[in-house]
Length: 281
Image (cartoon, rainbow, N blue to C red; front, side, top):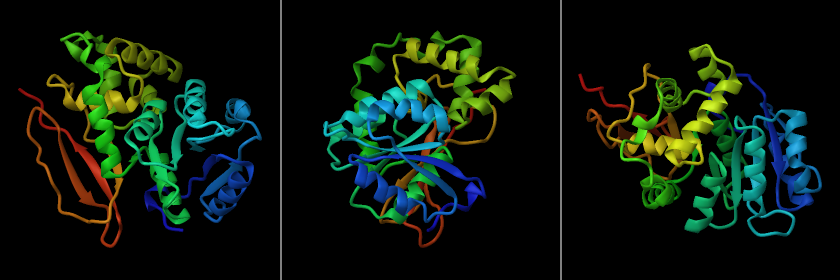
């Protein structure tokens, strides 16, 4: 299977939770062909997933939108998993690309949206990308997310001062988050514990009326007073596409611009990079 070499030799611990036990077993067996993954099937009942995740300390969970013969049960389970471990990264398996399904998946905390019509090889790429901190979604799915955020009353209900509501330390956490750092990396940079970073993020979410890192990232990108990151690291979004396309967008201070560049020639996956404009003097 193909994967991004940037992942190195690190083994990714993956929990697979499909809609039925037999589908879970078949999918787990297929993914085990990737030597860089340690794949474990889910327990029989979704109610036991949270305890299983705590026990095995997974890096990525691959979860179906439908579980236990209940439509969209996977969204509720994913919220529970993310509440238990905010560092857990998730890929949502979907049968439909309807707008409401995609938006619900992002709101539940999914960092990857994967259609069952795609191949197992592409799924392995998706899992590696999500593990590396990227967002895996096609351009239409990203459009649904952006449109939902733009129309969200929660976002518009935020005080007119927006990010100015945050304390100095909370702004530092947001800056680090905009660079794509994990809670552990943010804690290391700021000299704080991961538990403290989680508490800061919860307060930031509450003040700004967002419910996930993705919403917070989009808010910082669309806010005229967005604090600029202190290093040149960038967040990235991996966009599956059939076209390699030329780079679009430009870096216009003080707002960030979005550029799309091919990851490599012959690859059908594009990387959407967030390019921050220069901070005003």
